[in-house]
Image 1 (cartoon, one colour):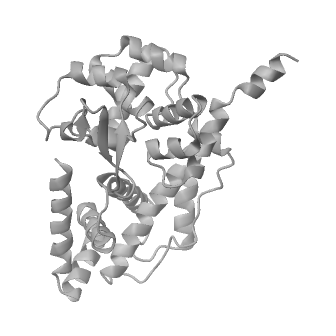
Image 2 (cartoon, helix red, strand yellow):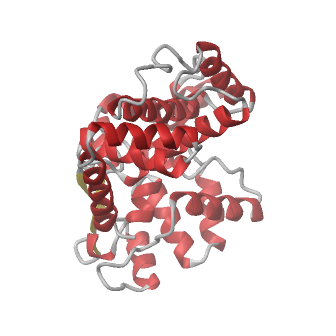
Image 3 (tube, one colour):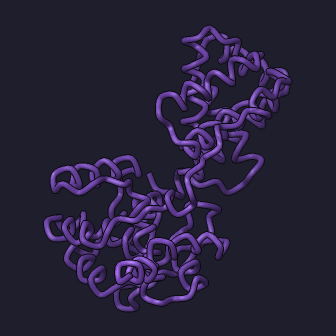
Length: 311
């Protein structure tokens, strides 16, 4: 499904809920909760979010739906009153996710989805409760650079040496162009200018566009992959499928899997190591705040390590 069709479907979905009378909207929402109709509740979440925020990336909606789905599943198994959960219910849900090993950032994303669900339920006047307002994941005590660990260059090269051309394109879109997972899988051929050595990408966060310069190696791999009709996706599939393919490639070649997003950290680290200013790095990666790029310096700066080795 193309991004344009995806947007159209969700605008139509939003209009379908908006067109209902307040009484009918409430009736459908309450009935969905009573009948544990997760599909209808997730559609309500999408409709309300698109209605209130306008442009919303498919990846954002996917994450919100995931958080809402996990909460609704938990509530069903624990006999929680979804429309009026107790504070203990929401706290225990968060603690259970942390006990299962989810990182604070991941818990925060899922919490955002649950909050979005209750925003939609309040819009439908199915409840007045705000059960997740004061719920927070435990503080992430990792240092900022530890959360942005890149793949070592040697590991990336090991993967490139054995990967088929489509996986080489994926590795270089992440590890050189610095694209996010949703940007990699959503990239179309019409956005790739091989002669000009650049591509245009829609930012997975906020819908902004940016022009990204391509390396010689990435251009060669894209040509070998075979330029197709402009409306077709270069990589396609879903971010989850891309992560699974990278994990498999890493496992097969004894490379520790750090996640697909770690390729983006590799791109940032390489640029800092090459001497580019943080502003250049931020623009290449599409960071809204240049300070975000500062953490790459920790992985790029080996001078202190080299100095101490000589003492």
